[in-house]
Amino acid sequence: MTSRRTLLRAALLGVPAATLLPVDDGDHVPALVIGSGYGGAVTALRLTRAGIATVVVEMGMAWNTAGPDGRIFCDMLNPDRRSYWLRTRTDQPVGYFLGIDANKPIGRYTGVLDAERFAGIRVYQGRGVGGGSLVNGGIAVLPRRDYFAEILPSVDVTAMYDTYFPRATAALGVNAIDTAWFETADCYRYARVSRDQARASGFATTFLGNVYDFDYMKQEQAGTVTRSALGSEVIYGNNHGKRSLDKTYLAAAAATGRLSITAQHMVTAVAPASLGGYAVTMNQLDTTGATIAVKTVRADRVFFAAGSVGTSKLLVAMRAQGRLPDLPGAVGQGWGNNGNVMVARAQHLWNTTGALQSGMPAMGIDNWADPAGPVFAEIAPFPAGAELWISLYLAITKNPNRAGFAYDSSTGTVGLTWQTAQNQPAVTAAKRVFDKINKAQLTVYRSDLFGGDKVWGDDFTYHPLGGCVLGQATDDYGRLPGYPGLYVMDGSLIPGSTGVNPFVTITALAERNIEKVIATDVG
Image (cartoon, rainbow, N blue to C red):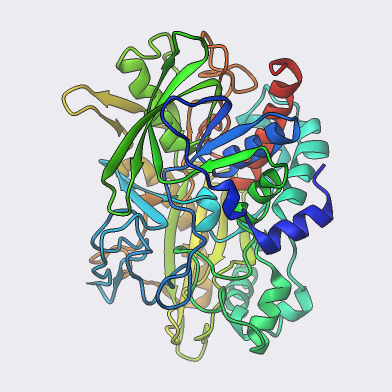
């Protein structure tokens, strides 16, 4: 298990520059990992610890160089080209204010957040070394034990909760907020207001673990360190305080001396190689997104960890193009949005939510036991730097609807069949909670934040899951049938829902799977 000393050192230092070594055309590597998010980072650490030289290929940048303003990442109030992946205008989840488009023009750049648009949904994904850990709110929670058993019935629940979840939370650097400090901290007034109103309306609330360093946040509140979570830094990256994967798993893997990370390379093809193993073709990108080189590397083993969307799209394309023609029909299926829907309530003028708000959520409303519509809702910040009397929530619901990825031969692209109307069960479940709160508190919904007269943010997700479901598209440990040496290790293994923020589950499942693969497949 990762030692505490190693984790603390990693959290301070991050991935060393010497690890960022691009592969060359024609290279032969023992193990190649596509993607550096949660599944990829776990895979990289465990392979390198097992003595296996490993290359991680990441399409995003290595976020380790400060811009002209002295910061690596920009904040939410002043987005610039660093904010979005190859866009000329921001595409914020809360994109309107008073019904007016609040997005801003930016320069086209390989920025840290991708808002990938499909026909019926936007999917937010991290782009950079560390994947989604760079852009999420850091909420680290375990799914309910009975629900985990429901969504992944072939997985040993006892082993997950006794071994792999603890291993994951330790390696991720999860910590808990000082609850006494929380009760008086100005930056969490918004959370206390929502908590008190939820409780008064008959709903339970719970504190949430986080990978953000709450001791650092205390110093932010006291004004003794540079503000990050309290400086409107969330979805475009955090400059301080956050234990993202580049500072935990990937840094620990780099410390073995067996890890190489190839950034700004997008894998476009994987196929059996004539000399054995697999030929992996990739485009090297510049910061405008242009291809400046095409390379092919031979890998003995390939681990797909490009996220639910990235892995599913790549494998669906490889099957359709005849490169991996024997992949099962279940590849590309079982995708869901974790029941995500966002909503906001307007507070009374005398009930302020605070101008200073921490971007790292610390509380949630737990109504999952409601059989008519289970809901777990994080109490989200609205870090606008001014008092706006807004309570914002990201609800996670038990939406049974699923979608699939499909290859379009006329364009050579992969689409997603999800339609916005499929999110109606999520809206209906969330309404059961927030209608009741509004009635009890004599408050109303905000209808100006997600479009013109639109109450529900039902057309985007932070939590893409599924597409290569464990035990259907793969065997019970992520192996792709018919292709020895190909594995899936990310959120695409989870069938569309976890009932909570999913990254700890993705991490723990990857820990379980890679342990088995190393023990049985890797000589």
